[in-house]
Length: 399
Image (cartoon, rainbow, N blue to C red; front, top):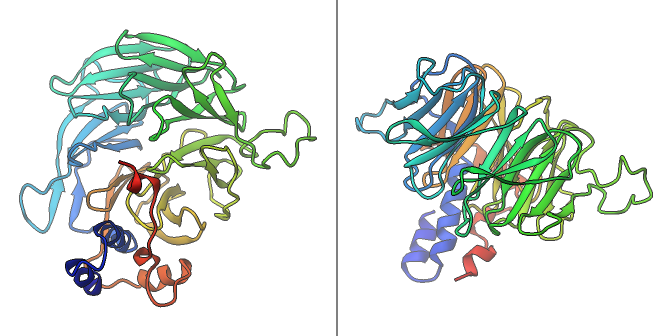
């Protein structure tokens, strides 16, 4: 690292390269932070976490008890050991609390004045953060499994909602109504995710083993249905053709540049897809234990080289190199099934929520870590980490 700092100072190296190297080094040294606790408010399992991207300071959590909590992650006490306080929460006595389990919470992408939540009580609520009351509520006929707002949209305010019904619902914040639906799945929609690259492109995952990509401007809607065999088994029966997994698909996550899509299924497999061509990249991640009947909230790092996927796996979080499939490490600390994790890109930290009612913070170790040896082997580099190699994404070169 000192050599890289010297090379940057003398103008021999690029600042982007140094930033990626340091971010990668920090992710490779993640460990459970014993000096940072997140105040425990939830009385039952935690299903969803989301950290706002404006300051990276406030985190939402939604639980099986219907409670929603806003946490302040900043260390205001300046003490070595501190607690991330719950500054506001929608408790069971709140007049607008969800009646059943909260499955997804998300900050409005552009400021912290608004956030959204969806629940098994068949509602999606738009919350005014300042008064902690719903500004609008959308009601559905079926249980709501997942929802998502586009992180890059400037021309629409649509929220995609996956429910027990096979149709994908699109709710418009401007009109306060469901603008239209996307038809194509045959069973419940378990996960939805807007592309961080194209504001009109949406990915949806269903219990029918299929993952579909949609352009919501098109009359037909569906751009493609991902095929794990890349068309090589087109003569197979119609039931087996064009399936992304051999079981329910309940996990979706785009890479930060939107060029690739990661999917997780109950066939205990994870697959990486080229989001432009719909091609299965055939990266082998091995067997990933996944027996959840609900959405699995995984996340992918941002600004590392290579990028890493953080995947809930039983009571642990498995960390994979996205483009090679190597298992880098396993984060252990929870006592029960991990449901969700959120990545804090400013400081390369991970927060995870579990059925044990705890939210744990994972931060880079300050000392030299044995993970450095693991990373050198797994990333196939003998003398130094691949973090120091030149690797440009399209996001670096775009103006």
